[in-house]
Image 1 (cartoon, one colour):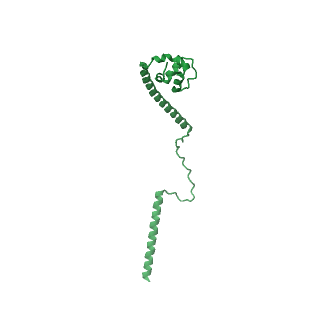
Image 2: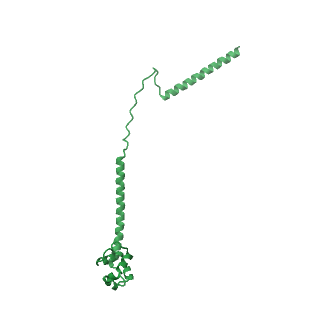
Image 3: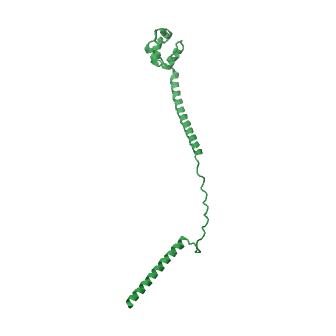
Length: 158
């Protein structure tokens, strides 16, 4: 007869494999504790008499190999998932860039048509304009000096 201790030594998938061999139904969604209770019912105990002989389960030699392989598989699956996510992200960025309209290369500015001259005076450059303004200032100063000299001379002459 199976005991609670013997049934608890098995993992849930192993218990499900054992119970699958019998005609018991409705076990697939049960948790381990509920499954053990189901197996310990008086009407089902006779179906699991072979389990009584195994006091302690000895793990298979393949179990350690399986766990190593599972770990390796999980690592590789994680890397593959990361690569897949990166590819998906790059696709999204590529689609966004296609939708986005980038400005075309700047074309050289077209020269504005020259304005018509309003007067007959020639158009001057900035340098010529500065020279001309300086000359006009000097002329004004010279005129003021002449006026001052004339005024002084007239005052003293009287």
